[in-house]
Amino acid sequence: MKRKLGVSVYPDHSDFETDKAYLQLAHDYGFSRIFMSMLEVSDGKENVQKKFKALIDFAKGLGYETILDVAPAIFSELGISYDDLTFFHELGADGIRLDLGFDGNKEAMLTYNPFGLAVELNMSNDVAYLDNILTYQANIPYLYGCHNFYPQEGTALPYDFFEKCSRRFKEKGIRTAAFISSQTGTIGPWDINDGLPTLEMHRRMPVETATKHLFATGLIDDVIIGNAYASEAELAALGAIDRYQTAFAIEFVPEINEVERQIALDEQHYRRGDITDRMIRSTEVRKKYKNHDNPAHDHEGVFQRGDVVIGNDRFGKYKNELQVVLEPHSDPRKNKIGSIVEQELVLLPFIHPWSKFTFTERKV
Image (cartoon, rainbow, N blue to C red):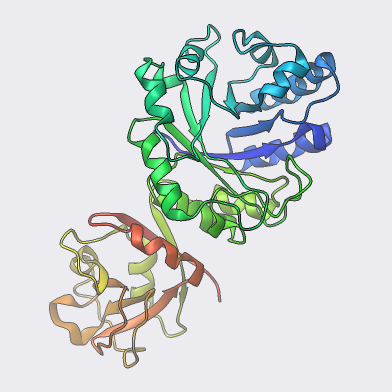
């Protein structure tokens, strides 16, 4: 399943031209999904249609998939019914997100709507809600899952709970999504906006680290920036991310040599299948570089978690093997070539046996 990057827009709290410019910019950096809130509409059905359709049409022209966030109160406000999704089809939406659930049979029936609109469920509850819907033979390709976001500091999900909730959907083959928080965005659906992440640990985290983390879990297909507007630097950082393997940002030591730089940056790494607790071993590179000299440097201290080391000329057959340190240890036969940036240490537990990974240089 292809992974997507998404942005959020709030037409009832923003300017149409500003939203258009934001969507164009995000598109230029590879974003292809939109979370569009309809929770606050209050200016009549005709005005709502005009405003939302214009923005969705513009987004469609850029190739975006647009999911509208809706609630029962909006249906009453606009005089429409869950039994007839014509209104959303005419807006050009690709799906609707149900803020509240029904009895299971209702959600299943909605996935057979004649317009092919996706029906997105709230993933942030560790209950058998999805199982109930699937027993009613829902149309699975048109059933999505998406976590909530949490505007108030301290209210977002802890990781272990997030994992349990997400597995319920991922193990059933449902497309999944979660939110991260821009560190510059100030717009959301409510008057409180301490950021809009799904996970509390992501609230103050750089967007690229939070996104790498969500993708590394293997539980989330689409990552959406919850608040508007993310900065261009943030959009660019996310656009550059490898969505299918972890690319660690590494800060090199000054004494790194060209062979070590090539091993780190130019090779595809994977963790050896017969793992050890002490380090992540990338062993294939030592075969390719076995005839390249590698004098000792930065080899006499205690290596710390997240340090990246390469075997030096003293290491015999293990010369030029790359390792990522998991447990502190000393070994003068290894050169420290750099360290994974601190905020990305959270990614280490997701490098499993045979996991693929790479490195990108972070300038000190």
